[in-house]
Length: 217
Image (cartoon, rainbow, N blue to C red):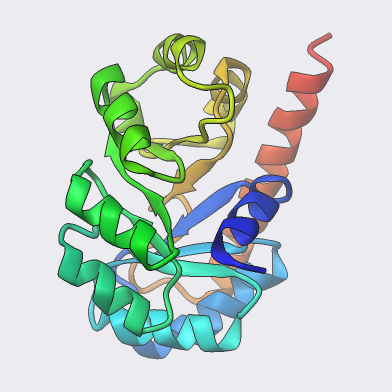
């Protein structure tokens, strides 16, 4: 599958992006195996982690069916470096047209961070694959519903920041397509076994939220 197909497949399966901020390169394989076992196929290593490109290269090599890439991508050079390491996913905390254009040129999935309708429309016009709604603590389900009402129906919306199984349902009902999960899944120093436990619990939470959305009564 190409990167876009991997992204859409993941949204239809386990629509959760693992944000592995602070992971050490020597931990990447074991943590990747734990996530793979629990069904996660969207993995991002923020570029302010130790030796992030090596972690991305390791994950991309061992989990070719997953969509592996970087977070905190701020420049076009960052995009090219991630691509050279084998990454296919570009996630940013902000919207920068040059970053989206470079990701698009290289055929990568690109999820820029936005907060407002103006940013959202500009990012989609630039060719973004979807939108990282960040920080979600400031973008309530009501705000997501308002954005969903005016954006194209096929725009992919992924709230990131403060997402838990307790609020997933509200965001899904409002029109979210998935979520980015950081410290609720992984924090530096955690073992792969601990990550596996948290990953499975988050998948269970997502499944419960999806079931409640389908059958609210």
